[in-house]
Amino acid sequence: MNLLLDVRDLCVAYGKVEAVHRVGLQVEQGRIVTVIGPNGAGKTTLLAALMGMLPARGSVNYAGEEIMRVEAERRVSRGLCLVPERRELFAAMTVEDNLTLGAFHRYRKRDKTVGEDFERVYQLFPRLQERRRQMAGTLSGGERQMLALGRALMSRPRLLMLDEPSLGLAPLIVRDIFRVIAGLRDKGVSILLVEQNARAALQVADYGYVLETGEIVVEGPSAELASNPRVIESYLGFVSVNAA
Amino acid sequence: MNTEIALFLIQDGLTNGAIYALLALALVLVFAVTRVIFIPQGEFVAYGALTLASLQLGKLPGTAWLLLGAGLAVAAVELVQALRVRALRRIPAIILKFIIVPVFLVGLVWWAAPQKPALTLQIVLALALIVPLGPMVYRLAYQPLANASVLVLLIVSVALHFAMTGLGLVFFGAEGSRTPPFSDAQWKLGVLTISGQSLWVVGASLALIAALLLFFEHTIYGKALRATAINRVGARLVGVSPAMAGKLSFTLAALIGALSGILIAPITTIYYDSGFLVGLKGFVGAIVGGLLSYPLAAAGAVLVGMLEAYASFWASAYKEVIVFTLIIPVLVWRSLTTHHIEEDEE
Ligand SMILES: Nc1ncnc2c1ncn2[C@@H]1O[C@H](COP(=O)(O)OP(=O)(O)OP(=O)(O)O)[C@@H](O)[C@H]1O
Ligand SMILES: [Mg+2]
Image 1 (tube, rainbow over the protein chains, first blue to last red):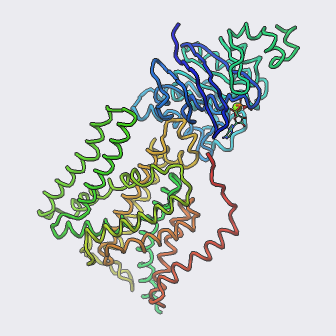
Image 2: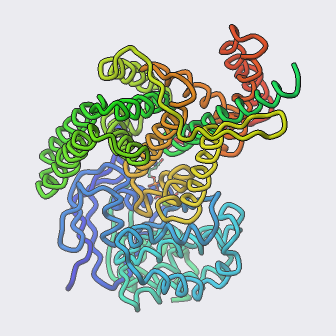
Image 3: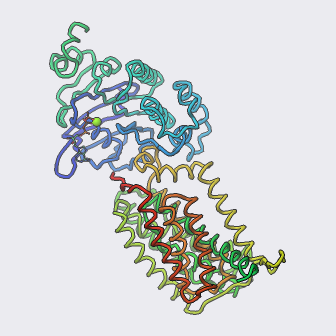
């Protein structure tokens, strides 16, 4: 077992209100791990804290090092990358500039291989190539999701954290996005996936956690979770009993 | 008024307007990236002019001591921080950047100044002393307050303006200086006489604006600054730290300020406190662009230059009043035409 991310006793609070309480979570190298849970459970908060965008208590060990005191920008250059729920694209800049900035830390290190990644991202999302001179703010919702994912890939992440990548997408595109996610794992990228679409998430993931009001209530291999009565009732609906 | 005077005033207005445009661009840049209204911008203008004047007299400029002092202060702050997070590996770099390099620069100027090198070299030396002050000022005064409101940052700016004016008095004294022009050439163009220095000012300003444009459009750091201005959270997520962006924008502001001072030093007599008014006129230009739009800010600044030239002809006693009164119709016009832009909450 090769742990890339090992989180223990993580607590995150907004003022006095604790949104994430003593969460423990592990991601093995090259695996997809999903966190599912109802609205307001603290999933977004958890990812933001792991990225270093929110102050937190506890321990976060990444690639064998404690990174709790490391700033977000430094985490990026160590291969941690977050696609946030609100995407946070650079609206008044072109699609291409957004992708370029995704590779900012690599340009800083004079990495000569950034060009290859442009091609790879454009191959994955041909739509982005067609619109590479368009301002990011004028893209459609689906194109924006592609750009957010593309920008993240430009940083060559080791651990990619995705906050609801299927939010607001048509079913066909959702399938595409999940195919991309599975493809990334096959290339060795580890993924921490937060999803409302629990069925799709459990299908693609290797392991899953259920977060409710800031605490992990159930965890296990995805297949096990998918047949857990409690999970079925709350997150998959009754239909899946027959479907599974 | 005859054509000759009208044309002369246009030349005068354009020359000053070019300088105001540079300062307006720097103000917009600093505000967009850091939300700081950089009032001490003008002090960099005065420092630029006075440093060059000292160098031309073969003296070590007072800015040298300022650079050493600021370097020591930044080194102290950074060392305390490094010790606090136990990042001992950073210590050699801190000592190199904030103590050894400033000492080296000051040593270089101390050695070179009495030999009265060529004007170009003097300008390079002056810039070498002043430009590093930009990021140091950011590190000391603004970086610890990165999350403060625009108002708090403005108060810091006002305080810093007084501090830097005072230091200017200490290091340069109360007398004004004027440097010889870059070129004595004069051209007759019909009834108008164009002075070489005016051409220098306008030409250098245009070149600098073009260079800035290329920097923002085509370099990764230029894009990083734009990204920070557009979306700070997004910028952090791709690894652009607000502190880095802040230091970079202050470096550019210091460079623009010092160069502006060097360019106008042969046109007007500069005192330790002259920078403020010059900077304020750039600020009026920047307000025309709502502190957001670069082209509007530059256009506004040229307008300020023109207005000033004509005001000094018709009512020279009220020159400054007229120029600064411009801000009232501009603000009325802006408040009628623009929607309020919410300050982004993070
Ligand atoms: N900036 C904030 N200040 C105060 N409370 C916040 C803030 N952001 C989130 N919260 C609260 O923290 C809790 C967890 O929010 P979070 O956004 O992490 O939930 P989530 O699991 O991502 O929900 P969703 O599925 O709706 O995206 C919620 O109760 C929310 O109201
Ligand atoms: Mg969320």
